Image (cartoon, rainbow, N blue to C red; front, side, top):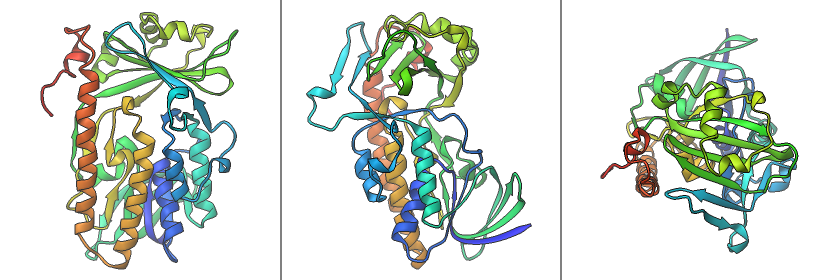
Length: 372
């Protein structure tokens, strides 16, 4: 068994974990960082819609758009929504004073951040599973890992960061409580559109069982996702391409936007998209960030921005804690996230309650709550 010592151990190699690692390495002094990722870094990554504010967050990490390969930030010229009625609600970037939003190529984005971690001297271990966490009397951590090739690894860390996404792998093993608000689930595909050029925009359309999202990617591909609850996915067997395609054909506008793909070539992927918040108020030398801390409905477009901002805040806390422990810092962080989350819940409620066309649909009934 290998034995490693590190100041900061980060679980998860997505935007939250890598942003935390970069922030600690850039703003800390002689601080060691180890980042472990369960996957082989070759998994499907769902491109995301992000606002121009992401570039300010990247600037804090000393990263500019030019540090990423071409195609990482595909300009999104607007959004058309069919929500609450068949009348389109359009937001065109040309009429906005803000810099246009982008459709993010997550593979390019994530791997660029990982490379930055390595370039700054961080240890990156892919294909590594976390088997157990023991917190010692001095609040340091002894963590058992298993690497696909190196086998068992024991890591002694002073500070632990959970950046494992909605699955909350570290938080769950540590019995960190979480308040889960729904069971939203996304079933999607990358569709190759032939014979015509797609507009550089995105579209959303609500239906009886949920809502659809479609956006243009590079090389005339369209990411197209159906969001509904997990029990509806099971009831209608939506993980089967034929059933997913049947639901797509029941849309009025999304199906017209993406004509030209081969239905026989549909290769579906699925992602949990539920809303939740963790409670780490009583934790010592531990913090959760990104989706592991709080996850948001994809309709909010908050995922990547919160991942990076929470990571940078958590990294600052970790650096302070390594110098002098103060249990109140984690409580303040929790309170800040809770305020963001509660405001999000109010906005989420307002958005969903705009749709009143299917009052007997279980999906929409669940979203006509009166209070939070």
